[in-house]
Image (cartoon, rainbow, N blue to C red; front, side, top):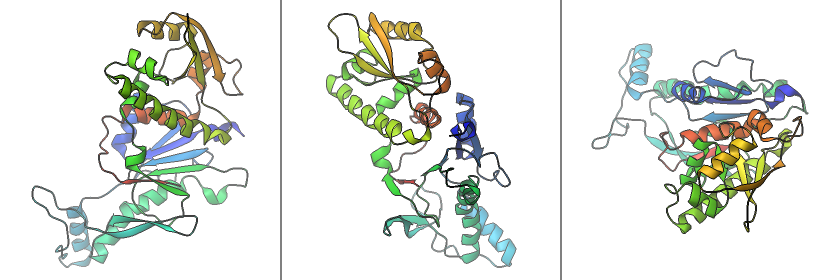
Length: 322
C-alpha cells in the first residue's frame, strides 16, 4: 500500500472541524467542513473517510428563500411546533438502502413545500454527497479501495454495508481514559488509575468489557489498511499477571514515561514493558514509534473519544456505516 493511502479524511460541520484541529490531529488526517468542499482533490487518495453529522439549514431561512424565488408565501402548516420548542422540519418515513437488498427504516426531515425541500436537500443531503465525492471513487482502481463511515441518520442515494444504532455504539465513561492518552483494559487497573470513572469493581468491569469490545472492533476490522494499532503489555513487579494497554498519540512518550504514568496511578513498580503489536513499517518496535505512527483510523477515533463527553449527541439516532 502506497504512503499516500495511509491518510484518513474527516469531514464535519465547521465548528466540529475547528475543535478537532484545535485538539491536535496527526499530520496524516485531512479535514474539511460542509459548504467548503467543492473542487477539493486532496482526499482522492486517502485510505478512508469519516463523515460526522450533516448541515441542516434553519427552516425559516429556507422558507424565506423559497418565497423570494417563487414570489409566493410558503405554506408552513405541517412544520412541527411543540410547546417550548422551535419550529423545525417534520419527520417522515424513510429508509437506508442495504447491500443485501433490504432497507433500514428511519424517520427523516422533509418539508411539504417542494421549493423549500429542494433548497433544504441541496444543503443537507447535497453536502453529504459532495463530501463522499471527495474520495473520487470513480477514478480509483481496483487496488485503491477505501472505507467510508457516515455518522448520521440522513438517508442518501447510496448502498451501505450495515447500519449501527447510536445507542449501541455511543461511548461510555471508559472513553474518558483517552484524554490521558492511555486506555487500560484490565478492570483492576481501571479502578486503581481512574477511581472517578470507576468507583466500584462492577463499574470497572463494565468499563473493561466495553473497552475490549471497542478496541477489538477498531483494531481488527481495519487491519487490511496495512497498519495496526499498537498494543503494549505491562507486567508489574511481583505476582501480577501482564495486562494490555493501548497508548494513544497524546499519551506518555517512551517506556520510562509510561512507567512513571503507571507508578503515579498506583500501578507500579513495573517489571517490564513489551510491544505486542506494532506497525511493520516502523524502524523499531518502541513506544516512541507508537506515539508517532499510530494507525490513521485509530488517530481519528482517539480524537473523537476525547471530545465525546462534551459533544452534542444525546439522541438515539442510527449511525450509518458504509
